[in-house]
Length: 473
Image (cartoon, rainbow, N blue to C red):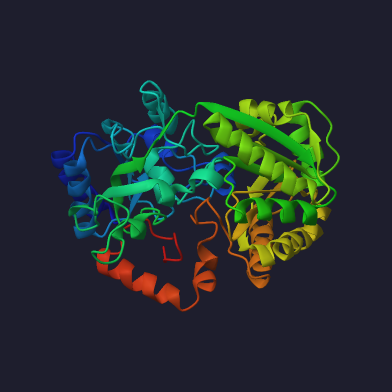
C-alpha cells in the first residue's frame, strides 16, 4: 500500500490540479467494486480493498495532471467508467487512485456525412444512443451492460454487443481514440481506421483495460436507424446441426444482425422463461435489418441453409419477444445476486474447434455439480471463421460453503484450462480484468513478453491498473 506521507503529498498536489478529489469513505467504497462476483462478495464480507482517493477529472488536462503526479509518486491508478465490468478490471486491488471518468460525458461531434461520432469516454452507452436516435442515427453496439457502461469502457474491455454478427465487435466500430499516457501525454491516433502510415496504434489501446493509459475520447462508426427488422426463430435437431447451418449462413456472406443459438438446456432454462414458452430443442434466434427487400432476401437464404440441416421454423414472435426483453436477462430474477455465485466462462474458437471447446468446458465444470453448480450455454457473436461459446454457471447459495472464494477460483481454473487445452481462446468480449489475469501469459505464449515490453515503455513507473492483463500487482 502507499505510504501515508507519499499519499498525503500526492493528495495535496492533486487538489491543486484537479477540481474533484474525494477521500470520502462512501465514494471510495463505491469505487472498490464492479459487477464481478469476487468484488461484490468481498464487499459484502467487509473485505474489499478501497482506493485511497477517487478523482473525477473534468477534462483531458486534469487526467494528464493526475497521471503525471501519480507516476511521479509511484501510486497505482485505476480508470473507471460505468463500473459494469464482470471481470474485476476496474477494481483497485492495490489501492491508490481511481480515476472516475463519469464527468467527461459529452457528445463532442456528429459527422452526418461520414457517419461518425466523437464522444467523451465517460458518456453512458444508453444516453449516447438516445442522443443519436434523435438524429435518426444509431451506434450499433448493444451490450447487455449498455444501461450502465460507458463508451470508454466498451473500448477498454474490447467488448461486443448483440449485433456483432452484422456490425462487428467494438474494435470494428472504433475509428480513432484520444488517450492520456501514464506520463501525462495526450495523444490522438490517426483519424481513420484504415491507412498505411505504420501500425494501427488505435488497436493497441482497444482492450488494454487502462494498463497502457486512459482513453478519454472515442470516435466511432454510426449507421442510420434501420428502416426494417425481420425476426425469425428455428428449432434444430442437434447442436452440431445448428452450428453447421449458422456457419454456412455466415460463410456465404449473409449478415444477420443477431444470431443467438441456445443449446437444449439453455433453451429450457434461460430462454423459455423470458419468452414465456417452453422450448425443448436447441433454438436459434435470428434478426435481419436494413432495407426491407435486402433483409428479407437474407432471411430467406439463411432459413434455407438451416432447413438443409433439419431446422424447423418457430413463431417469429419468439425472437421479437427476446429482442424486446433482452435486457431482462441481466436483472433479477433472471440475473443472480448474492448469496449466489455466478460467472460466464466464455470462449471463442474457429469452427473446427467450437464444438470440442463447448464439450470441454461443460465436462470441466460437471464435477462442480456436487456444489450445486448449473451451467446454461448458448453460442453468439458469429463470424466467418468461428463463434463464441457462452457457458454461464450459477450456484444458488454459497453461504454454507467453507471457502467460496477458493471454489470460485477452482471453477475458473477448470473452465479456462479446458478452453485452452481444446484450442480455444479464453474470452470473446468480457475482457480480462483480475479474473483472467493469471491465464494471460499462457494464452499469449511468448508473445506476452512483447506486451510486457510495450507496458514498460508506456508506463515506466508501472502505476496503471496493476494486476490486469497478466501484469503484476
